[in-house]
Amino acid sequence: MTGPVWDLFLFFLKLSLVAVGGANAAVPSMHHEVVELRHWMTDAAFSQGYALASAAPGPNVLFVAVIGWHVAGWQGLAASLVGFLGPTFILAWAVAMLTQRLAGDARMGALRAGLVPVAIGLILATGLVTGAAAARGTETEMAVAVLITLASALFVWRSNLSPIWTLVAGGLLGLVLLGG
Image (tube, rainbow, N blue to C red; front, side, top):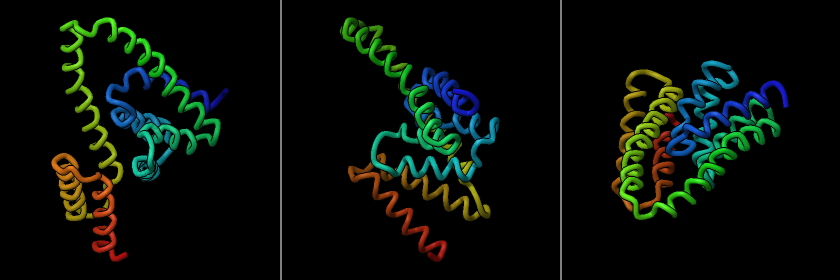
């Protein structure tokens, strides 16, 4: 492995160990590396790839595969996924064994409680980065996009309905507002 394939593998290998909260929490770091530092993708391609991977059925880690595929085809896809999933698989297995041993320990509960705000903050940062990457248009259009995003988040948070309805509503709003 050489060139971008190796670079993808190493980047995702390092990122996997600090991606508290899953792949979505690591999106700001991915954007920084892939768009701003290496220029492997444009802002538009990054946000479109993220939207596509998020809308597809399956785990949110699909976005890592989209980046790898975009940069280096099948080899990039494989390098990205192995780099991102390998270390976390080993770490998750080891932590699962440890938590079984320490199931009743109060420190374990404190550790879990302390990681929740970290994960929430990382996921919120993901929303800000992907929203900024996708932001286009006038101030009014961006304000409408922010309101739609907030309404969607509120709907998902407070409703028992499937989040897919936010995608359907967003698509219909796009047709109405942008004229098809």
